[in-house]
Length: 332
Ligand SMILES: NC(=O)c1ccc[n+]([C@@H]2O[C@H](COP(=O)([O-])OP(=O)(O)OC[C@H]3O[C@@H](n4cnc5c(N)ncnc54)[C@H](OP(=O)(O)O)[C@@H]3O)[C@@H](O)[C@H]2O)c1
Image (cartoon, rainbow, N blue to C red; front, side, top):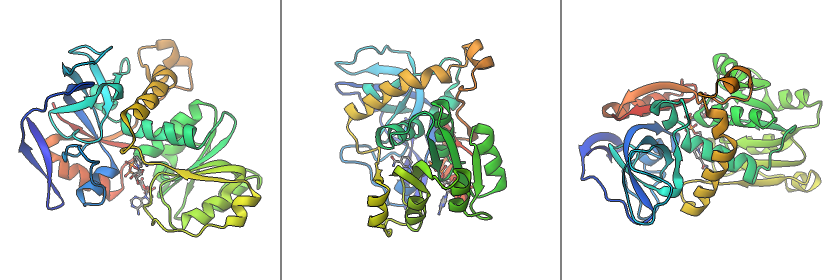
């Protein structure tokens, strides 16, 4: 099969044997694969695959089941799926734990569906399992125009939360508002802390979904109200930060976070179940009534599609930071 390999911090096209699914796994013929910032970290040697996982990059795919290993129930050959994987997505065939497969949402094409798993799994588990976000609460999402951010805005808005975001340009802020953000702050021209406090009449927000770290932490904690939850998912501005312990005590804050990739198949399967139940009906484009009348409809935002052979150009584009939403590789 054709696949992409990392060599000297660059992505190169190569050929490898088609892998065989083991017990509990399926082999998926890949139609499209999502590109995520963690793939860039992996290419640069900063995010190695967990033990036993292929070194081929790619954390999410869409395609058709080509073969099933033993002990796979509820999936059939030829079934169209999208799936979260721990690696191996940038290839014509990919091994997937069956628990991490989800049916292709009705009416969605393979390109759009390939942009769902990594961001939606991450957003779901961090907003709800860790951040305990509830209807009527307010969440501040940094990097609102990112793949993660565009999913977070729509998912949080769909459950009835108020969403504030930050982004680096007015154009990105506009796109975030269109997706459902009530407040979008261009952090290059405005102070997000001032804006968040102004918008909540000094009450503060309930949850911060943070992909910055570093000097953002103390400002995020100030933006949180009593009982607030701070959820870290990345450290683009640094892993070390100053934490005001007294503030945590006085406001009874929770400071938490998570990484998705090293979690067990069972844990990822539980997130898949929650997404299927709560989010899949909102992605369904075939439900005409829902599409017409339901403001809660969720549409993954696809910025640009590259062929698999141009995976390096896709990384360079994502790295440039101009995108809004997801970058996708067309494999078939
Ligand atoms: N913990 C987990 O399980 C998990 C899972 C998936 C992804 N992640 C992390 O979540 C973040 C978003 O992922 P993604 O795939 O959605 O990436 P992405 O689309 O490339 O988004 C990154 C965003 O960060 C903003 N940014 C601010 N400072 C930056 C900097 N110094 N370098 C690059 N970008 C910067 C950019 O927006 P502006 O131009 O508006 O500043 C950009 O939209 C990444 O850091 C990724 O590693 C974590």
